[in-house]
Image (cartoon, rainbow, N blue to C red):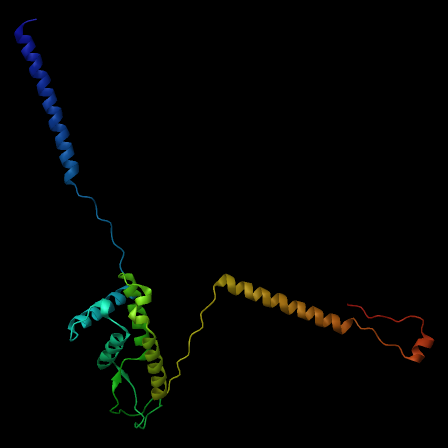
Amino acid sequence: MSAAVVAAAAAAVCGGSSSSNSNASSISSSVSLSPPSPQPSLPLSRYESQKRRDWNTFGQYLKNHRPPLTLSRCSGAHVLEFLKYLDQFGKTKVHTQNCPFFGHPHPPAPCPCPLKQAWGSLDALIGRLRAAFEENGGQPEMNPFGARAVRLYLREVRDAQAKARGIAYEKKKRKKPPQQQQQQQNEEIYGSGMNHFQQSNNEHLTVPIPTAAAAAGASMIALSVLN
């Protein structure tokens, strides 16, 4: 075989391998350049959005505190200061004892009594902050929003606003699950049926006590039976 034929064959092999390498590199570059499609994130619920805003507000309050406070040094007393600080932004009229509308649920005229945060708003706020504290790495036993002083303060605010506004705050009863509620209804129906059966049995199954005259003239004592 001549040297020219060998050189032509070698050139053909090199050209084929280079073209295959270029094709592979172009394919790999096209794959690597296409970014992965981002997965759509679910929107936050109203509760989660409010909890995040409340947590950021409390964090800003700690930064503006004099002297500045850190979350690790925050106690129930600081939480009470925060709740009292929020009263200046309240929109609920709380009548004083000297006000003629004290205890009136629907006052007929305006009065100079102060506006404060409603008890229900404060109670819900503490619940959200208590959950946010533990979600951000806080220990449940060190949660300042669950301190006994905070619970007592909320109870005092509830009672004071109930008297001042003439509104009774009643604790809502938790609804039982449908399965448990159906089981309770079945037990009540079954129990009432058994009571009715025992009552009717006692009414109809009687044994008359014979007198001396009836015993002399009768040979048997008839028993009433169930219908």
